[in-house]
Length: 114
Image 1 (cartoon, rainbow, N blue to C red):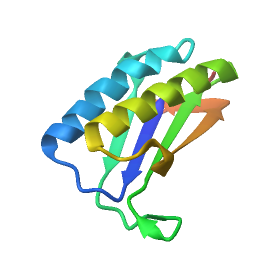
Image 2: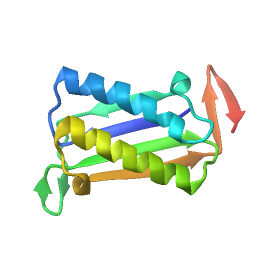
Image 3: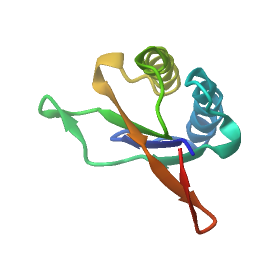
């Protein structure tokens, strides 16, 4: 199960949130074996976040079950940054993306090995 957790200091409109959800959902297929069908997205806007001492920052945490090649993360990160920047107007150098791989995850009370 892939999971994208977005935290941003910007306040987002409902339209921006919907666009982020839809467009970032489409990007998950860049990562080998991942589909939007199992994707969960959590968006937190208006967070008190500072980067280099000033407001205007985003942290996008992408977790996947299992393992993927680094090249997938490189391509995915470039696309996520482009989309987030386009929708919010935030400069790419203020958007930090963190990737993580989970060897196990559960769904419906059942633990599955990735």
